[in-house]
Length: 515
Image 1 (cartoon, rainbow, N blue to C red):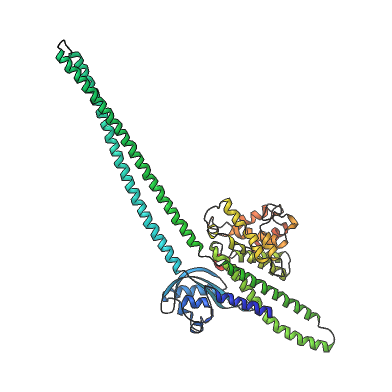
Image 2: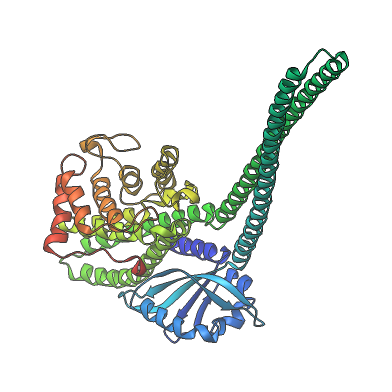
């Protein structure tokens, strides 16, 4: 129990230290919990907020939409990354990203809702400023390009006039040659006329030379105009380079909107502590049951002990809820970096548990493979967000960075004392029976059974869900894929159990909105 309280205290410390506002409310829409992040975001202290209606923080025009969303949450659905407005103390409004999740009691009944509110006002202002700057830059570039085009047209006009001058000079040269021919014919015995004719020939030759020099200068002017056109083209290239640099700055701004990796690590450590305490309590309950004997006196003492254990089991159930909420927090921190795969980890965990149940595993092992599914992509916190959210195909270099998430997840979880092989299953969920998987190219029985179940569940869920680089594929195509790989890539028993779920028991993967 001491370990459980310590784990819960650590969870409370993590929640309280979060930069995001984390708020709880009951079915009467009254605020029941309020962390330090909520004080920083909204300006109200916990004393001022707790017990107040949640409408204190919601603009009047958004109440109807908020009520519709809450109806979904009260049915057990999760709503992630809702972009809306919230009201702070003093009436100031902020842009916010809101994630809502149901709070369940020990019987699975929804008793309230939890909200994670992130103030994204500065991010939206920065994005708007960047868009305005890009628009201004684009306008400037268009104006520059227009001026360059006008300059090229003007240079073309000059070149055209120069060409016309060359033609005129050539025509004049032809006329002069004709005159020289006629002068030669007029040469007569008169010396004075012959001398003047000779001088006229010399003058014509001088004029031909001058015209040739003019043509040469015209050609040089054409070359100079071409040089100016080249410099104008270089200016266009420079403007495009500046635009690319602005886009790179926008990428870096987007990278700032991610979850803190250290918080994800502390959440994983809290998951470990809760799981260890749950396992210890179950072992204690088992040993107590064995102490019940025929002797009436001992039976009475055992009954008293069972009563005490029953009280502890109530606390254990509370710890179990805390454990699952902690796992959900760790999963949600990962999904903050990759909103396009929201709900993927939960869907994989749920399908993995259903496959294990179909294979006849007991509930303890089913729970272990479900938790491994919930955490199987936790290592993606090391993958750059622009790769996770990139539309279209990624390059081989980017794919090698994505593959690093397997070993990163293993390193996060390997020191945790789970009662199940969680870290090993996470490390092996991309291995394949024929040795073509990664990171270690394991084969056949070298891959743990939990890893084989996760491999099938991960492929089926990923192919059935929307991604930024493609639309969702029908379930039939995903089932065809695991059927083709049965016994070659994927474990035959696991594939058969999965096909039975979908074909005979109408199993369906939940939509992202209900994850």
